[in-house]
Structures are given as structure tokens and as C-alpha cells.
Image 1 (cartoon, rainbow, N blue to C red):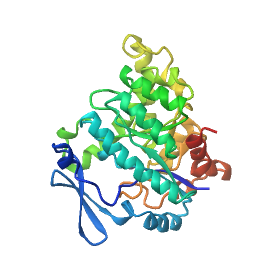
Image 2 (image 1 turned 135 degrees about the horizontal axis):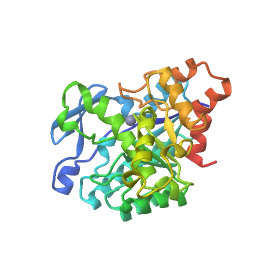
Image 3 (image 1 turned 45 degrees about the horizontal axis):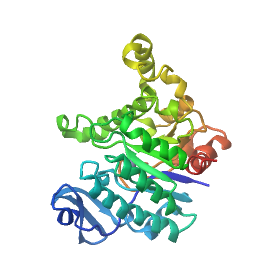
Length: 329
Ligand SMILES: [Zn+2]
């Protein structure tokens, strides 16, 4: 069983939220080309996508061709809308979650779904989380920070608590990259900012005591946890020499949380895949490809299959770890 936990999907048509809510910033799709669409934000080009971004039949043909059995669907992070008015972000979330819910229902055993939440309003987020569970989604995807809240913000704790209580998995995806406006050339927000965002998220969850207080919370971080494992020595040393700064809210060292959260396998490098798997353990890495985007693993699972690992270890990372993360057993 091969499960790809990191894939993004959009509805084929997105209503004009800007018109509906009376202000801009939302993504729309321009289908004026055959088999593709242009994602626009307030009429400014953001990204071109192909029909595999919205058509489940095309997706199934492609992922079956890659030997994948199940895709876990989540929205594209640019759709989070954390910056919008809470009730409007809630409406966008409902629209996206219903779309994913319908696909999961229509194609059982082919797709699983992660919802999106209006995290800027924890009350609405919990309300939507409950609805996500009701419509058959297995968890949610959230950003690496929520506007100016890091994931340790006390305001967000009730949302994590609800995820634990409702047995909903949490996938943390980097977005709204730090420093992006200072490094617009060379795709640096994606190449430098995203790995830093993932580390920011893990450090916030550890230092803020979120993982400590919610041992049943199942959190996975995208892109192999970004720069976290490769800079863990520094993070641990910082914790030891400046407990006044780092241990203010949680007295347990960062390294003691290895094996208590999940990472996806998207590191594009067999040596690094070995490294992250050594760090968090073979039960806590799951195949994730970032399908259908070009910065993802274009042949999902290929690097895992090429590893000099036992068959059992490969099977865990390719699929069985993901089923446990999604279902909680
Ligand atoms: Zn992604």
C-alpha cells in the first residue's frame, strides 16, 4: 500500500470571493487555455496549473502510473486566507473542504482528505474542524504560522486540543515565507524560506509545550521538517545555554521530541532521507510528493524505493506509517 500524504488539489471553478466579500486578495482561476488554468490573485498572475490540479480522474491515472494507491488531498496553501475577515475565511474553507469531501466520498480507497480551517478565528476553526470530521476528512492542513501567531500562540492551543480530542491529524505546511519580500529573486522564498518556516513551526510546537501538553496530537511537517533536523544540534545547544530564552515554557529538551511527530519524505536526496529517518525513526516518516507541483518528487516514492533499506522499513515509509497517522491506529 503506497500512500502519498502531501498532494494539493483545487476545485475546477472558484467563485469570485473578491466580488462576494467586497475586497481583494483571493485567488481566482482563468481557464482561457486548453487543459490548464492560470491562478490569479486580484488579476495578477500567481501560477499556472494543469488539469491534474483539479481533475480526480487525471490524478488517478497519473498516480496509479507512479505506483501510488492513495492520495491524501489538501488545498494549495495560498488558499488558506488567514489574512481575510474570519467569517469570509470560514466560507472559503467550507467551499474547499466540501470539494475535497465530495471527492473522498466519490472515490473511496483512492483519496483521503485534509481540510483547511479559518485559523485566525480559533472558535470558527474548531467549528469547521468538527464539520471536517463529519464529512469524512481525516485531518487538517495548517500553515507554519497564522499571521503574526506562531504555532505556540495560546490562542491556537484550543484548536490543537480539539484536533487531539477529535482524532484529527494535523499537517503543517510552510507558507507566507519569512523574509520573502527581501529575497524575491531566484525562487528563494521557496528554496530558503520554506525550510526555515517548517523549522519555525516545529520549534514553536516544542518550545511552546504544545507537543508536551498534547501527547496524542498527531502532527506531520512537510518537506522533511525543512531545516529542523539538520540544525537540531544548534537548537539543542541553544536550549542548553540559554534556558532563560528557550526553556521558558517547556523544560524538556528539543531532542526529546524526536519520534513524537511525523515528517514527510520530500527532501529530494537519499542521504537526507536517511538522515531524517535516523533522527525521527522509521515509524515517523511518510511518503509525500507535493503532487502536482514541479518542486515536488515528480515520480512519487522513487527515492524511498531506491534506498538501501529493509523491505519492512520501505513499506512503513511508503504507506503504513501514513495510515497510522491518518487513522490514529
Ligand atoms: Zn505542498
